[in-house]
Image (cartoon, rainbow, N blue to C red; front, side, top):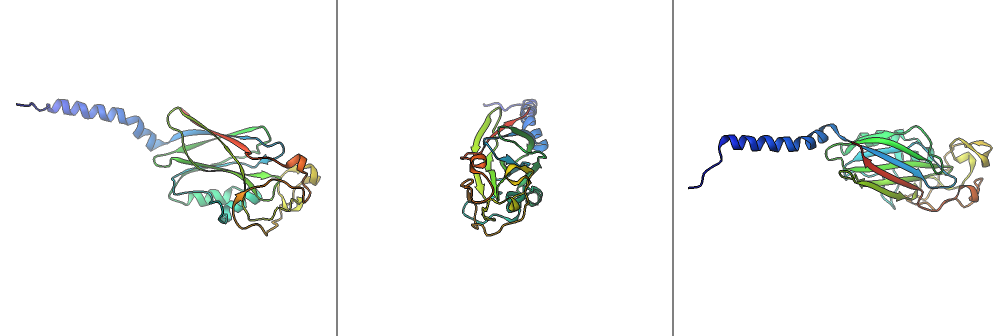
Length: 228
Protein backbone atom coordinates (compact mmCIF):
# COMPACT_ATOMS: atom_id res chain seq x y z
CA UNK A 1 0.00 0.00 0.00
CA UNK A 2 1.33 3.44 -0.95
CA UNK A 3 1.80 5.74 1.99
CA UNK A 4 0.72 9.35 1.84
CA UNK A 5 2.95 12.21 3.01
CA UNK A 6 2.13 13.40 6.48
CA UNK A 7 0.57 16.80 7.13
CA UNK A 8 3.91 17.91 8.58
CA UNK A 9 5.75 17.14 5.32
CA UNK A 10 3.11 18.96 3.31
CA UNK A 11 3.34 21.99 5.58
CA UNK A 12 7.16 22.10 5.28
CA UNK A 13 6.92 21.87 1.51
CA UNK A 14 4.56 24.84 1.45
CA UNK A 15 6.83 26.90 3.69
CA UNK A 16 9.87 26.18 1.49
CA UNK A 17 7.94 27.13 -1.66
CA UNK A 18 6.89 30.44 -0.12
CA UNK A 19 10.43 31.17 1.04
CA UNK A 20 11.88 30.68 -2.43
CA UNK A 21 9.18 32.75 -4.12
CA UNK A 22 9.37 35.62 -1.63
CA UNK A 23 12.16 37.57 -3.39
CA UNK A 24 10.21 37.54 -6.65
CA UNK A 25 7.02 38.57 -4.84
CA UNK A 26 8.87 41.41 -3.13
CA UNK A 27 10.35 42.56 -6.46
CA UNK A 28 6.91 42.62 -8.06
CA UNK A 29 5.47 44.61 -5.15
CA UNK A 30 8.24 47.15 -4.65
CA UNK A 31 9.71 47.31 -8.14
CA UNK A 32 13.11 46.57 -9.60
CA UNK A 33 15.38 49.55 -10.14
CA UNK A 34 17.23 50.02 -13.42
CA UNK A 35 19.96 52.44 -14.41
CA UNK A 36 19.50 53.85 -17.92
CA UNK A 37 22.66 55.45 -19.38
CA UNK A 38 22.43 57.51 -22.59
CA UNK A 39 25.65 58.50 -24.39
CA UNK A 40 25.66 61.20 -27.06
CA UNK A 41 27.47 59.94 -30.18
CA UNK A 42 27.07 63.09 -32.28
CA UNK A 43 29.86 65.66 -32.83
CA UNK A 44 27.69 68.78 -32.63
CA UNK A 45 24.24 68.07 -31.22
CA UNK A 46 23.06 68.24 -27.62
CA UNK A 47 20.28 66.13 -26.15
CA UNK A 48 17.60 67.91 -24.15
CA UNK A 49 16.58 66.41 -20.76
CA UNK A 50 15.68 62.75 -21.15
CA UNK A 51 12.33 61.04 -20.67
CA UNK A 52 12.50 57.39 -19.56
CA UNK A 53 9.40 55.22 -19.04
CA UNK A 54 8.62 51.64 -18.08
CA UNK A 55 5.41 50.21 -19.49
CA UNK A 56 3.59 47.24 -20.96
CA UNK A 57 3.88 46.20 -24.59
CA UNK A 58 0.55 47.90 -25.31
CA UNK A 59 2.20 51.31 -24.90
CA UNK A 60 4.47 52.87 -27.53
CA UNK A 61 5.82 56.36 -28.18
CA UNK A 62 5.11 56.37 -31.91
CA UNK A 63 4.64 54.32 -35.06
CA UNK A 64 6.97 54.91 -37.99
CA UNK A 65 5.07 56.25 -40.97
CA UNK A 66 2.24 57.57 -38.76
CA UNK A 67 1.67 61.11 -37.40
CA UNK A 68 3.36 61.92 -34.10
CA UNK A 69 1.13 62.59 -31.12
CA UNK A 70 0.84 66.22 -30.05
CA UNK A 71 2.81 65.38 -26.90
CA UNK A 72 5.67 63.73 -28.80
CA UNK A 73 5.74 66.61 -31.31
CA UNK A 74 6.12 69.03 -28.38
CA UNK A 75 9.11 67.08 -27.11
CA UNK A 76 10.65 66.91 -30.61
CA UNK A 77 10.13 70.63 -31.36
CA UNK A 78 10.69 72.20 -27.93
CA UNK A 79 12.48 69.63 -25.77
CA UNK A 80 9.57 69.86 -23.32
CA UNK A 81 8.98 66.45 -21.72
CA UNK A 82 6.04 67.48 -19.49
CA UNK A 83 3.12 66.85 -21.91
CA UNK A 84 4.41 63.40 -22.96
CA UNK A 85 5.13 62.48 -19.35
CA UNK A 86 1.58 63.41 -18.35
CA UNK A 87 0.07 61.52 -21.30
CA UNK A 88 2.04 58.36 -20.50
CA UNK A 89 1.20 58.54 -16.80
CA UNK A 90 -2.48 58.65 -17.73
CA UNK A 91 -2.29 55.25 -19.42
CA UNK A 92 -3.00 52.07 -17.40
CA UNK A 93 -0.18 50.34 -19.27
CA UNK A 94 2.49 52.70 -17.91
CA UNK A 95 4.61 51.82 -14.87
CA UNK A 96 6.85 54.80 -14.08
CA UNK A 97 7.99 57.87 -16.03
CA UNK A 98 11.06 59.85 -15.00
CA UNK A 99 12.61 62.92 -16.62
CA UNK A 100 16.04 64.48 -16.34
CA UNK A 101 17.08 68.10 -15.84
CA UNK A 102 20.32 68.46 -17.79
CA UNK A 103 21.54 68.57 -21.37
CA UNK A 104 23.72 65.74 -22.66
CA UNK A 105 26.65 67.19 -24.60
CA UNK A 106 28.52 65.42 -27.43
CA UNK A 107 30.48 62.51 -25.99
CA UNK A 108 28.82 62.82 -22.57
CA UNK A 109 26.60 60.32 -20.74
CA UNK A 110 23.47 60.99 -18.70
CA UNK A 111 22.08 58.41 -16.25
CA UNK A 112 18.57 58.08 -14.85
CA UNK A 113 17.04 55.51 -12.49
CA UNK A 114 13.61 54.00 -13.18
CA UNK A 115 11.49 51.24 -11.65
CA UNK A 116 10.01 48.28 -13.50
CA UNK A 117 7.17 46.76 -11.49
CA UNK A 118 5.27 43.56 -12.13
CA UNK A 119 4.15 43.38 -15.76
CA UNK A 120 5.74 46.67 -16.79
CA UNK A 121 8.65 44.96 -18.54
CA UNK A 122 9.19 47.38 -21.44
CA UNK A 123 11.33 50.53 -21.49
CA UNK A 124 11.25 53.61 -23.72
CA UNK A 125 13.53 56.66 -23.92
CA UNK A 126 13.19 59.99 -25.76
CA UNK A 127 14.91 63.38 -26.03
CA UNK A 128 15.18 66.20 -28.56
CA UNK A 129 18.34 66.95 -30.53
CA UNK A 130 19.36 70.61 -30.51
CA UNK A 131 19.85 72.54 -32.64
CA UNK A 132 17.22 70.95 -34.92
CA UNK A 133 13.63 71.72 -35.82
CA UNK A 134 12.03 68.45 -34.69
CA UNK A 135 14.65 65.72 -34.43
CA UNK A 136 14.54 63.36 -31.47
CA UNK A 137 16.29 60.21 -30.33
CA UNK A 138 14.13 57.36 -29.12
CA UNK A 139 14.12 53.83 -27.86
CA UNK A 140 10.55 52.84 -28.63
CA UNK A 141 9.90 49.91 -26.32
CA UNK A 142 12.49 47.25 -25.46
CA UNK A 143 12.24 44.49 -22.86
CA UNK A 144 14.15 45.18 -19.67
CA UNK A 145 17.17 42.92 -19.03
CA UNK A 146 16.74 40.02 -16.63
CA UNK A 147 18.98 39.17 -13.71
CA UNK A 148 22.53 40.47 -14.11
CA UNK A 149 22.25 40.90 -17.87
CA UNK A 150 23.27 44.31 -19.24
CA UNK A 151 21.51 45.50 -22.38
CA UNK A 152 23.24 47.96 -24.75
CA UNK A 153 21.63 49.29 -27.93
CA UNK A 154 22.27 52.13 -30.38
CA UNK A 155 19.44 54.31 -31.63
CA UNK A 156 19.00 56.71 -34.57
CA UNK A 157 17.52 60.18 -34.69
CA UNK A 158 13.89 60.39 -35.79
CA UNK A 159 12.00 63.28 -37.37
CA UNK A 160 8.58 63.86 -35.83
CA UNK A 161 7.31 65.22 -39.15
CA UNK A 162 5.48 68.00 -37.33
CA UNK A 163 7.72 70.91 -38.38
CA UNK A 164 9.57 71.66 -41.60
CA UNK A 165 13.34 71.49 -41.36
CA UNK A 166 14.11 75.11 -42.23
CA UNK A 167 17.22 75.05 -39.97
CA UNK A 168 16.62 78.69 -39.00
CA UNK A 169 17.61 80.11 -35.61
CA UNK A 170 14.15 81.65 -35.19
CA UNK A 171 12.57 78.16 -35.37
CA UNK A 172 14.91 76.33 -33.01
CA UNK A 173 14.86 76.58 -29.19
CA UNK A 174 17.84 76.05 -26.97
CA UNK A 175 20.89 77.63 -25.34
CA UNK A 176 23.69 79.54 -27.05
CA UNK A 177 24.37 78.48 -30.65
CA UNK A 178 27.38 79.90 -32.51
CA UNK A 179 25.41 80.27 -35.76
CA UNK A 180 22.68 82.23 -33.98
CA UNK A 181 24.93 84.51 -31.92
CA UNK A 182 22.93 83.45 -28.87
CA UNK A 183 20.01 81.23 -27.97
CA UNK A 184 17.53 79.99 -30.53
CA UNK A 185 14.09 81.43 -30.99
CA UNK A 186 11.78 78.43 -30.81
CA UNK A 187 9.00 79.64 -33.11
CA UNK A 188 7.10 76.69 -34.63
CA UNK A 189 7.77 76.52 -38.37
CA UNK A 190 4.90 74.14 -39.19
CA UNK A 191 4.58 72.43 -42.56
CA UNK A 192 6.28 69.14 -41.67
CA UNK A 193 6.05 65.85 -43.51
CA UNK A 194 3.15 64.69 -41.37
CA UNK A 195 4.59 61.37 -40.16
CA UNK A 196 7.45 60.06 -38.05
CA UNK A 197 10.49 58.92 -40.03
CA UNK A 198 14.26 58.54 -39.79
CA UNK A 199 15.89 61.98 -39.71
CA UNK A 200 18.22 62.78 -42.61
CA UNK A 201 20.45 65.22 -40.71
CA UNK A 202 21.42 68.85 -41.29
CA UNK A 203 21.66 70.05 -44.92
CA UNK A 204 22.63 73.73 -44.58
CA UNK A 205 19.41 75.21 -45.90
CA UNK A 206 19.19 77.79 -43.08
CA UNK A 207 21.50 79.14 -40.40
CA UNK A 208 22.92 75.84 -39.17
CA UNK A 209 26.35 74.80 -40.43
CA UNK A 210 26.57 71.28 -41.82
CA UNK A 211 30.19 70.80 -40.75
CA UNK A 212 29.30 71.69 -37.17
CA UNK A 213 25.83 70.20 -36.68
CA UNK A 214 25.30 67.28 -39.06
CA UNK A 215 25.47 63.64 -37.90
CA UNK A 216 25.27 60.11 -39.18
CA UNK A 217 23.04 57.62 -37.41
CA UNK A 218 23.12 56.18 -34.81
CA UNK A 219 23.13 59.20 -32.50
CA UNK A 220 23.10 57.53 -29.07
CA UNK A 221 24.11 54.44 -27.17
CA UNK A 222 21.69 53.37 -24.44
CA UNK A 223 22.77 50.93 -21.74
CA UNK A 224 20.28 49.39 -19.27
CA UNK A 225 21.28 47.43 -16.19
CA UNK A 226 19.46 46.29 -13.10
CA UNK A 227 20.63 47.75 -9.80
CA UNK A 228 20.95 45.52 -6.74
